[in-house]
Every structure is written in C-alpha cells, then in structure tokens.
Amino acid sequence: MTRRTDRVAELLRTELNDLILHQLKDPRVRLATVVSVEVTGDLSRARVKVSVLGEDEDRTSALEGLTHAAGFLRTQLARRLRLRTTPELVLELDRGAEHSQRISELLEELDVRPEPSS
Image (tube, rainbow, N blue to C red; front, side, top):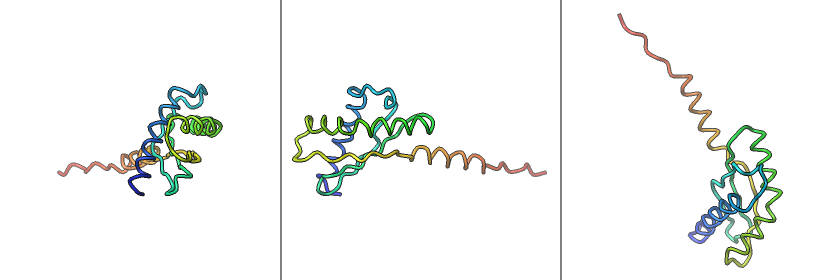
C-alpha cells in the first residue's frame, strides 16, 4: 500500500468507529469496533474488518446490521471526507482475537508440569 492509501484507510477506520458509536441507532451494532480498513489503490473499495464482542450469533447479527447500514455509513463518510469518490464498503468479521484466544487455550492445555524428581 502507498502512503496515501494508508492515510485514507486510517481516516476511514477512525470515522467509521465514530459513526458506529454516535450515529447508528441499531442495537445489534453497539459492540462492534472497526479493527482495520484496507483500501484498493484506486480508492474505489474498502475492506472493513469489524470485531464484535459476544457469541457467534451476536457477531452475525452485528454484521447484518452493519451491512444494512452500509449505504448510510458511506453517505456519512462522503459528507465528512474530501475524496473524489467514497469507497464502497465491504464489511467482514475480524476473527483475529477469537483465533488468539483459541491458541491461548490450546497452549494452556499443553502446559505439562514436570514431575518432581526423587
């Protein structure tokens, strides 16, 4: 990525987090946080990775709520940002925290204590 796409991605992440926190009234998305944004080189598409606290059904319903609100979010971004075109938002769940928790659990299970020697 170039410096420009990195700056735009970080700006989108910040603005989307603010919009989700303050503008969306959907109760399904209240525990959603934008973790990262990857923008294509021509700034036409942005892959938005979202982390949601809770169970799998909470994550699924939050993603549905965000997908439903994608048009609203894009319109609000267009009003806030000075870009020629506002990127199309492609929302997906970020499972990084979930994977790291699972790895930690597996490592704890493997933790074998040495037997005391006589």
